[in-house]
View: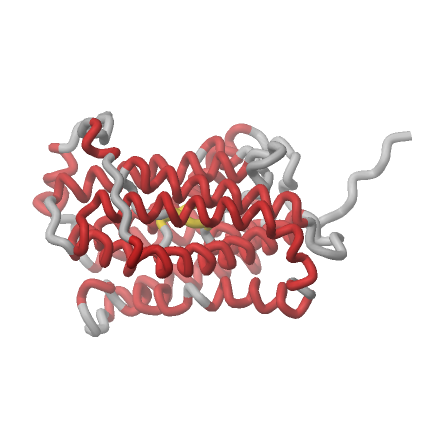
Length: 333
């Protein structure tokens, strides 16, 4: 007699195989959130006066590392990977220190310090299972809650207007943001089947339509897109892999590495709770593998000249809202 499949309340569980159409659309929906991380390389290059070509190259490199890190996170090997839907995105935690490193020693110093921070997180992943006593339910709950709270300032600034426009409140952005949010929430709460699954995509397309109505399409603003090649390798030669190190920045980067590890720890705990809601206590083995994947992704980002990447709280929240956590999504991303 076959065992009944436990009811977890998920539309697509961790080991489910959705139809190809659903797989592509849900992956596209998760990818929409990952695009937000491309803002960080642009802000970084702008701070130290880099060229537009440098910004484009760093965005491309960051997207490559985000994709590779997402696949590593979805793997379930002995030492690396959690097996959870926990995509990687450009990490804002490292932005301020990365700018400091570039100002002090150029991009090679930033790259070297990111490699150092990534190695630190990889080391932490090997001992985190022995620290289970430090993570009682109260601490675990607070960690997961703070993961969501930590993105409120960034979300609010973008909701009220462009973060590069200073303190100016832009009413068009508030209007578009409010309508988009209401559509997403409405589709998720009262929609059925596919409407619930694709609530984010529906909201994004509604928001885009409103934006085009309020601000008509201007071909001049998008002229540069036609000048960029469809396919190009964003590497400039062996000089791109130069690394430097500064002991004065070792402690700050180590502290940020620990903070990033705690954030990823919370994201992985949330993903684990979504995937296995009946789990009585945290399973530290996949969390340790997830932290190893996160640290390796940060180190690889430093090696090739991208900004640091980190697990995305927003994508974990989207998986919880749509109740779709199938681990093949990262491969499509």
